[in-house]
Image (cartoon, rainbow, N blue to C red):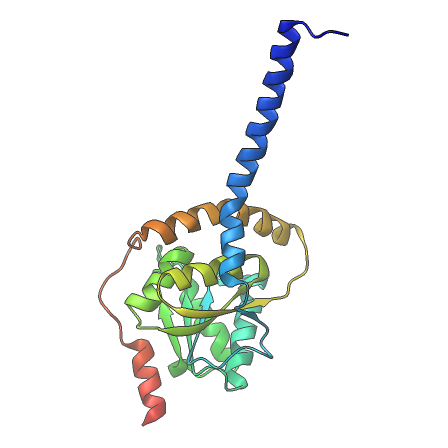
Length: 225
């Protein structure tokens, strides 16, 4: 059967539409591919994490002023690394944009209850997102090398962004039940990777930078005395 000109235009239009959709999907997934490549050889478990003076724990929300189960698992991993002697100081970075919402202090309270001395915990109250936390770790707290702790779906982006910010970073991705929150987090990462790629490329200043802080160097200096 011969195709009429109108039919040819329809077939060609459909083909172009399919090609456009495929191209859009490829472009959308490129940032995720970048985060996976950047972190490919830098993911560890608590058992084989390399020694680093500083562990960085990213905030993951509070329930009634206490760490969510997801955040608690991150903090458990940080406490384990400290007990194993693989890290000396824990930098907790999270949101304290409102007086009634204080992730870093809740994280500190949890860690001290699980055996990490208070003078080995340093708080970053302006870790509003992953890029801000990475930049502030380097520029404000002077962290040059660190083990980052987060969930598996987030840790690659954290390692990639901290690397872009100038931190020699390795990542520990903690295990979690694959519940609705886990699947939401994994889906969200596809979109968050796009912002991460833009942050790594254009390197915007954090929402709040502020003056340099000596918390990390002071804690490490006390160990050397």
